[in-house]
Length: 194
Image 1 (cartoon, one colour):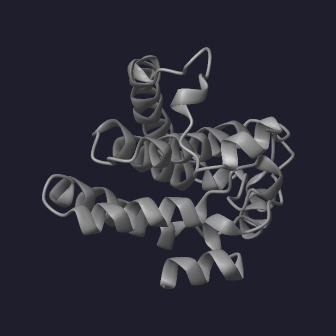
Image 2 (cartoon, helix red, strand yellow):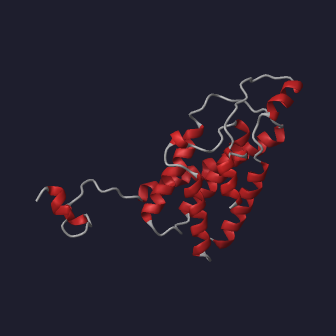
Image 3 (cartoon, one colour):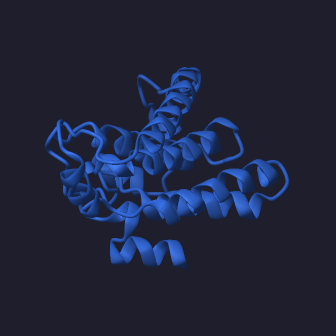
């Protein structure tokens, strides 16, 4: 409920973006630019907790896995036009750590419904690509946080790179036969005009 409230109120990771546009700033300006950055610290803490919790429950509690799946479906939109994740440079660590968790959820083959997997994968990829559709930004926060975010991005790249093996396993039929379509009696004939 608290996560959904943050989404609804557009706080932290879900704030509208006001990018840092200057690559070279003085210490005085750094403070000013940092004051417009979203506060993603609570989300970073939650996501760290979610990562630890996921490692504990992934093979033991299908109900909690369903909760994680529901969290992603309710947080990530299907199209980039309705994206709610902040694209501010200071939110990059929290954003990609959250998406890393989503890919872990998919790659552990614990979601049994293939349609659910496909939709969740599409939501995650949309959120990934949405970040890179913004104007260039430069870090306006501490070096240690930048280095931590670079580490998160490296870990994310590794899991994204391994996702290609899961994408190859998804078979998309090249042709659809009438026998493969499961519709209620009479609906198929009415579609054909019979």
